[in-house]
Length: 414
Image 1 (cartoon, rainbow, N blue to C red):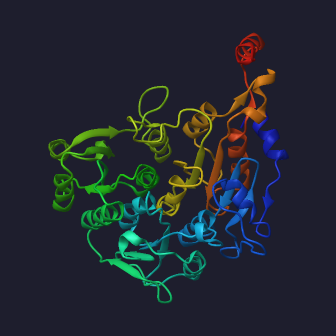
Image 2: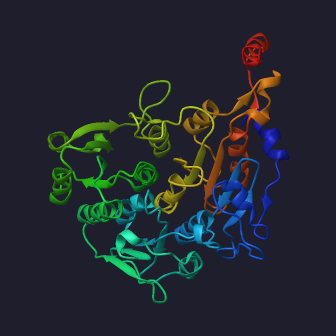
Image 3: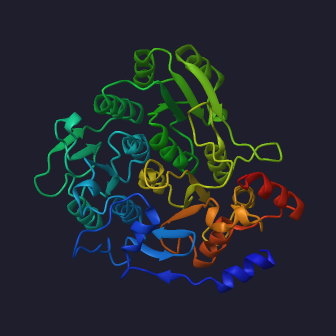
């Protein structure tokens, strides 16, 4: 750790804000404020927002259900008509691939949060979240307030529920695509294809990409393109296909996909050349990737970012809503609770905001990064949070005084 980072980490004060959780709305910058006399209650004992720093907000708790509930209630306080979702999506946390496919329902127009059931029942934190969100009902889906995907539990009360029955991953993803097309009133022109057998940590950031772009996630296997996926691609009429995990798919599978659409592979690379095939490197490439209007293209400061631990890949679907609302951040991954991967540290340093000493370039006129940290301190320690805060903070530019002065003169009114 650099001396500057150690000094900031030591000086940084991590402030618990369960009692002041209304501060979250200020951090979001997108949600409506609470009405007169209203207050934001914690999601559970650990709270919807547990720790904030100048440039980070930690939300969630000790398991994926708590994390998903915290994300949902952070984006949708449920205190006004405009701060309630049309619908929520309930997915069984034991079905990662189904949860991944369902993440696209967080995109426009539904912007539906993902809530987890566990073992066929709803954890208390999930039930409380649905109750407080009090979904309005999606008109395009016949007024459905809850979308049950797969083997997930039934919601509490008498909410209008639309159910997608349990299916194999490829068929489940195809059913989600049809539902999304129904909600939109039209078919997508772009899709994301991933291997069914890829490590969950590698696939976790795909949830946010689907939520941000609205491109449904479809599955391929080592044996080829499943019939359910083929049916969707044929119906879409040669769409743009973005493949993540190309190296894990056999050549015949890729050839099949090329016959069904225009294929572009998103492969992990590093700024220094070569490949970084770690989950952290893969997440960075997904954050950096852009193809016309598709993708994040986060290569400069001024963005929201979401951080999670690879030990909890379900935090990808849980946090997908943050990629399609609030500060629209891609998911970045830590591979241990107490260490920032070197590739991630380099990436954050590359997009760190800066300002010069010239009058026209004071911090108040700068751009800012903000990080959402998902999960409790077992996932991301307070020291690591402090280090991330330092890497996101706007700081003096290394630009020379002459360059700063020249730029200042160019921006001064005549």
